[in-house]
Image (cartoon, rainbow, N blue to C red; front, side, top):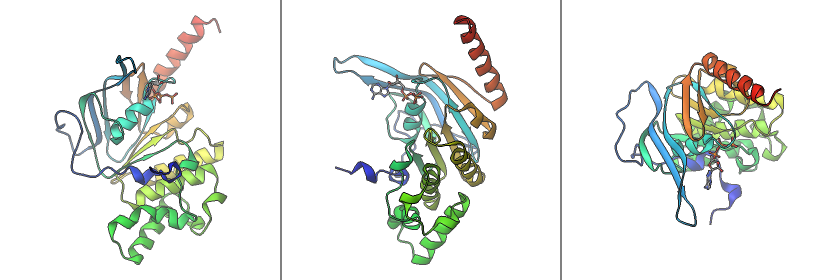
Length: 261
Ligand SMILES: Nc1ncnc2c1ncn2[C@@H]1O[C@H](COP(=O)(O)OP(=O)(O)OP(=O)(O)O)[C@@H](O)[C@H]1O
């Protein structure tokens, strides 16, 4: 069995060529890095009852952009991200996600597995049969993209949580990852670490790299190109960040009225 401490972002590169695990392939536009149509996901209880977690979720994320996935606790954000990553099989629906794709977890201590930053970023490159120079060049370029070049020789246990997240993202970039699926990366981070991670992600986007970022922190919306809002296992809205913010404010105000705040 795999040691849980060895789970890291690049572990979840899903091999080509299957575009999706569902019934039909999606005919997609090259302008989109992620497309999910009518995705549903259910679990079956011990009593044999099917419980829907995602219902009929459709989502389209343009290439080269950063989009946020928002919604109340338990609405299904992480589950949708895992379906798009290929970590869970949807019960219904179709999807296309560009490859290579990587899933980066919430807990920074689950991301880094090697003793030094350099070794950690190079960790996933073993399978590519690259020369030492090529490995070095990819590691340096990836660390530069996340603003961690000065830390290349640092032992990973001396890094802050946000720095560990950035090293995990560099590992994915070194493997020429085109889609980053980022699950609440900043939950455990203080404000300066949070900003470091957001800026690192922004800096590596454009061109071939696209990111979908699950968050609870509304202030992170200002860094995004757009957002998807979910409630009760459904995608309620996908739009520019201003429109999403307006809807969220309306919902917060209606909730405050209900409880007489
Ligand atoms: N394997 C599972 N078995 C039972 N229930 C599950 C399972 N996976 C998810 N759920 C339930 O599905 C719902 C959606 O979970 P999910 O983690 O996707 O939500 P979320 O929006 O990411 O939540 P949060 O914001 O709190 O992290 C929750 O009610 C959760 O308890």
